[in-house]
Amino acid sequence: MKKIHIFAISASALLVVFALVGLFLYQFHGFHDQKVFSGNIDQDHISNEFDADTDGDGVANLKDSDANENGKSNKQDVVSEAKRLVGVLYDPLKGGHGNIGGKMGFIVCIDVPRIAYADAGISLDQLLKADYARHPGHYETQGGTNTPATPYFYRRVRNVYDYARGNGQLVRHASTPKVGDIVFYSRYHATLVIGTHKDGTYDEVSASPKKIYTRETLHKKWKIRDVARLLN
Image 1 (spheres, helix red, strand yellow):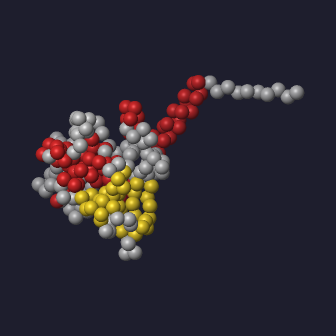
Image 2: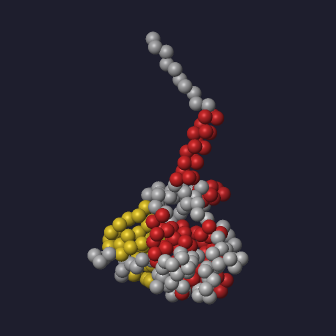
Image 3: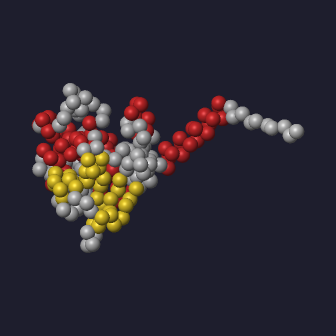
């Protein structure tokens, strides 16, 4: 009778394997350019994340055709940054458990427009924070658990929806998409339009748990939905 050899993998070996896998995912499948938020383009002691005039030219970001003053239009920056997010893993924990996934660079659906807009010099975080200070009634505060003082206020689709609705930037039942539109599939899922075509189709970048990683979908057939249209 042949002897059957059972090879036991030690706990330390498993830890090494998990560490290497984690390092690989962190390095090659995460978003790590936090300077789009923590940087300070105009050196005014206000981080980009909460700067209403990122390039310091005296024009508010949404009214500035080149909010980060890099020589490219806001739409160009939004599109190029969104494309750069393709392949980034979705955070299955959705920010939970101490935001372990977020710290590894994994993202949720609203992070796609949030990061793309931030790279253009337009911070959704700043827009939401300023609007909440002026009009807290725009938002469902849920007994104080959904305010700018809470960790995930800026990463909730419904808050971006409510911001757009409260500021005349929500297009209800949009008949056609435009580049830069944040498309709402519900109050809990959103994608970003990065291209439109003469045949009525469009391109989008989206992150979702079903897709596992951020993807670009080309020539998608448009279905009438609500959109946040922040860019002219």
